Image (cartoon, rainbow, N blue to C red; front, side, top):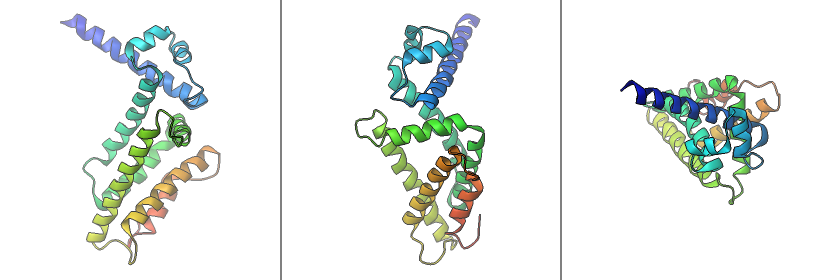
Length: 196
């Protein structure tokens, strides 16, 4: 029994190493200019070794890197509603400070994926729609509790909040003196009767 568990653990560790390398390579070069061969070199294995763990090649690696990032964020939002959901969004922004490579990769890919032919186009289109809907619901819940400023439309507040967070990430990557979390909290608080 110990043998398979050991093998499974080694496989899981190798997959993690490959995903870490994919993140590094994609963050540095963007998706289009990266190759599975380069990711394999970073890990110290062959391209065939990478494909053994990620049979779908570069696209499978990209999807796995993005899903790993999203899973962490979803964990922070799980079970949260209204103001608590909005606060959790700010906390997600706070975690970005220690994840420059992930933020850079996400920003590059989000820009590349505006091309309808990009392999991540559908992923980002769906992702933005799901997030915008979830943030809209949070603002609607805040409104139901009497916490939304008079005249604020929940959907417009959601779109403005997302645009602010995305823009702040880009400015931070470009070296401007911004605090993604605190500046995001200020934007969100502007829609609320009581600041976060």
